[in-house]
Every structure is written in structure tokens, then in C-alpha cells.
Image 1 (cartoon, rainbow, N blue to C red):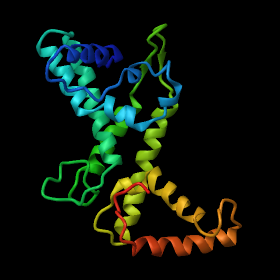
Image 2 (cartoon, rainbow, N blue to C red):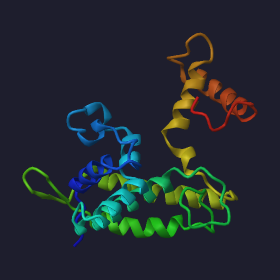
Image 3 (cartoon, one colour):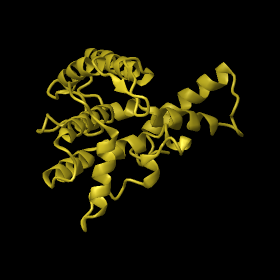
Length: 222
């Protein structure tokens, strides 16, 4: 089988540091030692920057220069796969002519569903080797979390399609919009931090239409 190693990422980063034109200048030192920095373990931005197409390109560049072993090609393939998975869960653009892109909204013409069907089978076969003791683990919470999220998103897509939606932007389903909604609810009244169910429903009915007709930047986080 194929084996992706974290060491290949470290080697690619060290090789990139020796180049005048660096590709991985957004990778901070703490990203490589998350065991020492617990506060960044749950940050999506860390994973998105580390497991990106740019990282895959840096690995292949280092391989072509014989700076890291050729087996690192499996690591590059894994990085690209995760990058595509991130894109499919963070799509924000209206579907256009290039329907192969996964950062476009899901429609009948895009390849999201076929990609998800394929990657579920891949994720189910994942096993994990401990870097310290070499133990092989098949069960990891995030592994089944990804599978459940993919299946759930497929259901949501089908519901939206049946309701007549032309496309679905998956970015609208992540945590930021939920945080924004509850922030708007808290702004009703004087510090509406502990509303009753009736007050919450009233604030919700006011916040949603107000936000729809607002002239604020719809792509902003707040």
C-alpha cells in the first residue's frame, strides 16, 4: 500500500528554506510541532496551509532535485487529496465553465458527488502508524467524522436540489455563518446573552431578514 509520512513535509519545508524563491513562506515553525503548541491543534487554517497544493508542489520539487526520497510521491498524493477535500467543503463560487473545480458551488454539472463517493472509500481504508512506537491504528475519531460529514453533506445537497436550488455553496454551512447568526441575536436588546426561547425566536425572525437586505459585505466574517 501507499504510505504518506509527516517527515516528508518537514524535509520539503527544510529544502524550501534554502531556495531564493520560497513556496512555503506561509508555513510557521509552530505548525510543524503542534504537540508543543496545543492551542493550534484545532485550527483549520493550520491544516489548510500545511496540506495544500503548494505543499504538494514543494514535495515534488524536492524529489526532482533528489533532496527527498521518491517514496514521498505518496505523501504528495495524500496532500493533494486533502486539499481537494477542503475545497469541496469550502466552496464559495458560483459554478462556471470549469466544472472540475471543487471550490465551486455544488451543482448537477460539478464533480463533487463523484469525488465524495470516491474519497469515502479511500478514507475507510486509512490506517495510521504512530511515529514513536510504530503501532498501526485503524480507528481515529476524525476519520469517521469526515465520513459522516461527507454523507451528511450529500443529503443536504439532495434536499436543496429537490427544493429547486441551482447550486449550493458549502462555505455557508461551516461554523462562521453560525457564529455570525448567534452574534446578531446577542446584539438584540441590551446584552441579549441569555434569551428565553420566545426572545431567541423573536430575535432570529428579525435578524435573518435584516441580514438579507443589509448592504454589508456578504463575504465578511462579521
